[in-house]
Length: 370
Image 1 (cartoon, rainbow, N blue to C red):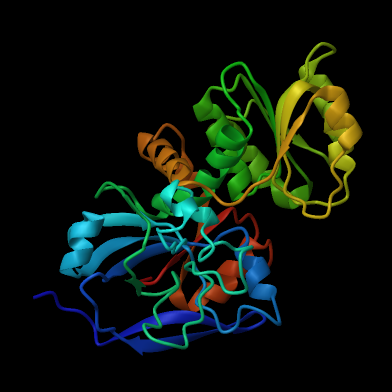
Image 2: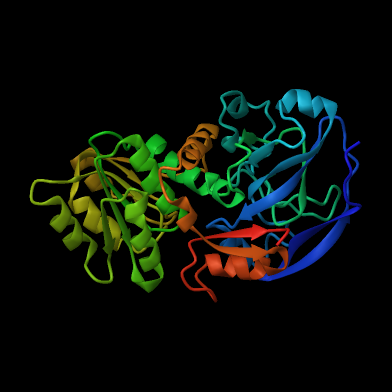
């Protein structure tokens, strides 16, 4: 019989930038449920925004870049998930219904139950109120409860947990640059924003075979990330505080060159960068933009026959590709995992991800056993 603790510790957001450690009892499991012993949970790029929210997402069990090993599993769940006790997995945050038209197409990220934009309380790890049982519904914890509709990716037994937490941010980058806007062989790609997902897009473009990859960032905070980017596949980096984006692009591309793909991860609604890169975009270029309140440049879209997309998380295949990139060991991804925190340091881990209190943080990881 598998032994387990009587209680489990979990970090809960109780208010705007307020976290407390709580203990909840080990839940009674149904035949189609399980428990995951969490080895590590990365801090996502969007989590500082959730953490700052004063009138929403409280209480909430944060943490969704989850890596661990199966600690307990019901017989129906074992048959359905095809995982054994002790196997290691990455789980995605989505908890889809698996019956709607989107789930049946394999696009569970659009499922009304799990869609961030589909309702006030989407069912996805990292955004669930832990007040009601089973309570253990976030990744900043020692264990997490696995309902029947958990989305799994198996990982090798010897893959370091810190590297495995990169599957979600790199998966986002793969989705955005390779699957959403068609980076590939012969393409010249500009990625704006060198956060963990921007660096994931560099890796995704490199894996897709792009011929020229340019990464742009801004200011001292981005410099460490820009310095790392060549090791991850970037051919050129630009710090736009030292050189304007347009001047840097013209220097790199030359008089005849242009951009085939642009992925702007920043969400900056100012529009200055868009004006500059549109000037050197090729006819037929693909643009991926993240700002919700930025006007679509219809005139430029028509003149240059542009395709404009934006993002909605990532597909199962994007994370599967990210794990292939990670397990290939082609890139020094351990350099992305800059900071490791304990369960009692979740507050600091989230603030460090936002560029506060800790210098040089790129990807922060919470180890609940530290």
